Length: 262
Image 1: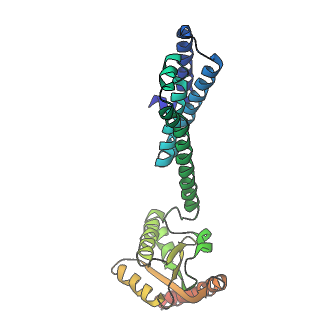
Image 2: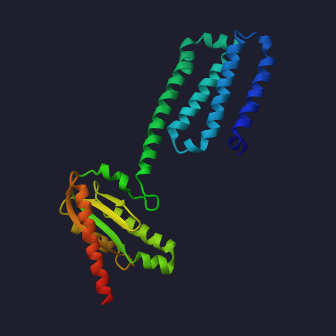
């Protein structure tokens, strides 16, 4: 749509139209031409800002509602600069206050909620792996369990898949494995992608073997194979447990390839 692609041109045209109307209706005897010009500039500026950020705030309903409320507020302020409208609203002081100050307050509340939710969503996105939707390493500081079992996973044969079938197929393998990792998690358990084909899962104490058996069941008859290492851990021993689980996973992986070459 033109008005969304060219906000500056639209705003400039709108401002010119307002200036023409002001000059045409000067005979009404505006109380303050300066106030009228200021309100006009503010409204046009808000329209320009809204059209500029429209696509960015489209997913955030509170920001959208806040923008509409601000536009209404400034439009109302501009209209009440017209003498005969001002005389009418002066007879309804309470309604005037609600439409003027009340709508402005509502606008600020809606925008504040919208910015808070948008900021939280953006922060969450920085802790998510783009390909799989699993958490990344940045989320390690927000592990929900105090005591847990740490499982370090690595996909077997991904390099061969990438070399023979292409990286697109390899990515599908990663995505599928990520899906079952997440599917097998309970409420407070968490799955992370920490490298190309390396994953970490935090599960409740004494549940690692049950979790792995669940993975095998979910991947039955699928060409997805993995190695893993398990370590008991707490939030304070997490880093050491991560290193030990990585080493245990690597040892299992080496055994897997030795068996295949025999």
